[in-house]
View (cartoon, helix red, strand yellow):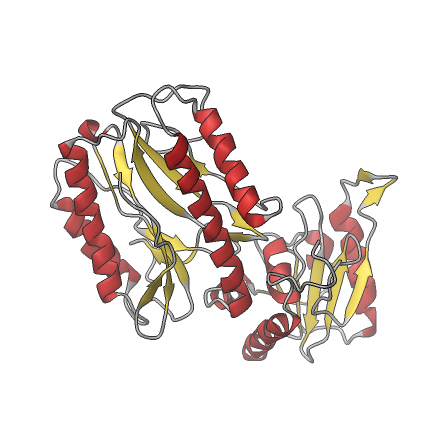
Length: 374
């Protein structure tokens, strides 16, 4: 924890949480909701401030008049954006309970007993079970799509955490270029990169993952020595205080990419130029996907066979979706990862490069301006 003499620049911003609550209240008025209850850890953090570990079952409620109740496994360590805080029994004699959702739901229902019975109740349909959904005997409305839409546009406190998360990947990629060489074990690369991110953050990560397998399109690290001639795709997605970075760099294991590998790399860079030239609020993500796909198709016989990218934030994949299965348009304030790629046998096994961008009122800001060479 930071000392009392130094303010934590990444701490809970109560004013920002309250502003997000006001946006939700506007949605509640539009949907004629008297009460919204959220149980997903990401939505509780977004609206109230604290991030609870996945082993807990907190809940939060906001009434149409703006009263916010937080039900937590323990008293928060920082000020939070709640008018009332209740705790539930998450542990018994230091043992985590398996019936936490039942316990926290009982506490929340009790806390709401003094409020008027809601006629229309907003819930997250994908995660809110009968412990809460059956307790009010009222009309239920799925508020999840509205919450995901609100989360698209990042506030300054969210951007600060995202930039710090991305700084972790910069440290990881720097360390990777120092240690990658023939006969290094993939597990050692993984361990070194995790340590680099922890040192950058000065604390534990709240998430990690993505791809650490050399000579493959992706996958977890294996107990295997990397081989000269392979391309090592490191698609890194650490999370800092709940916010996920996601960017990729590729390193030739012997530092001597072939002419074929270098040509594919040059072709992929054209997609980033396209993004930085054309993306602004209102641009179709589906249109950008097809434009990029057409550009990469010119590099036959290599292939590009997955999405172009996605938003990042409190979940690794958020809107906007750079994917033909969605019809999103870019909005100012969004942060997205773009990951064009080319794969083929001669590339051993391919090249995927990924940059993170902030959508501004006039274009995009590159958030990952660190080395991109093979």
